[in-house]
Amino acid sequence: MSGLNLDDFATLIERPDPGTRRDAEARRERLVPRPGSLGRLDELGEWLAAAQGTVPVKPVERVTALVFAGDHGIARLGVSGGPEAGAVALVRAALDGDSAGAVLARRFGARLRVVDMSVDCDPAELPEEVTRHRVRRGSGRIDVEDALTAEEAEAAFRAGMAIADEEADSGTDLVVLGDLSVGGTTVAGTLIGALCGTDASVVTGRGGAGIDDLAWMRKCAAIRDALRRARPVLGDQLRLLAATGGADFAAMTGFLLQSAVRRTPVVLDGVVSAACALVGQRVAFRAPDWWLAGQSSGDPAQAKALDRMALNPLLDHGVTVGEGTGALLALPLVQAAAALAADLPERT
Image (cartoon, rainbow, N blue to C red; front, side, top):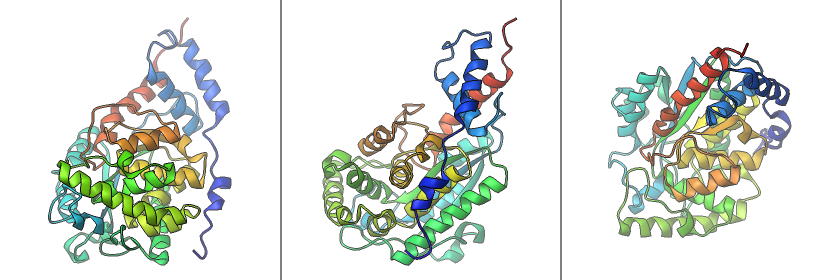
């Protein structure tokens, strides 16, 4: 991959400021509610203070709900319960404000941003601001072929980095990260299974739309075959994303790593964002310190990835719809933690 050295991220990414976190912990000791009485809200407030580099923490007001969209060739094997029209139907629902993620973003005051990386439709069918980063139309069938060429993987990764810079430069306080994909959970299971060294059955879930037993067996076989193609390239994360990822996965991974460079905290949604985060951890071990796990979806691959990154989900509601929905449900908790840490009075 010419011109892009992933090893640079390990040097560029620093942990949230530990000195500021200690100051936040000391301030918490002086607040009226006894220490520990707010449960994880205390931990969240201290984490936010360290990420922002300030005590008391600032309100979390400028939030972007960012969803990367793409179709995956593996869905042709009947492993997904997603819409027959493909991801374009999910994108249109989000843009029309009719998706679960769009409803919650509107309710919680988050700006919804949809990025088409590899939706299988004519780009003219969608707004230009949605398609301007598109790398290709659909990704390859990862059980028998690469998802992307090396050049496409690098282009998608760089697009994710550019979007992270755009969000940071615009003053975004927090990003809620999700996906709009068909076949994406099969890809996610493959990446997580490869990086965790597990068998296909351990990381095969029922998917965002739910599948029956026969479809689950097809999905398990597809992940098994894709794992054979993933294992030889485990030492090179861009090659791994090209072989058994997809344009949306490469972009999300680039976004997560560059967001950590730019000190922008991110809330992860389901198994797709967890898979990209796990790839990012392999690139830069400090990067997960900038991420929160919004929810546990019940997908076994997500649980495996979060455990590997030592991320403890804020919620456990089994939300599998994608679209950033589960992470958006955690947003009020994060905002509440910031408000309490900033506004509660100190003991006199």
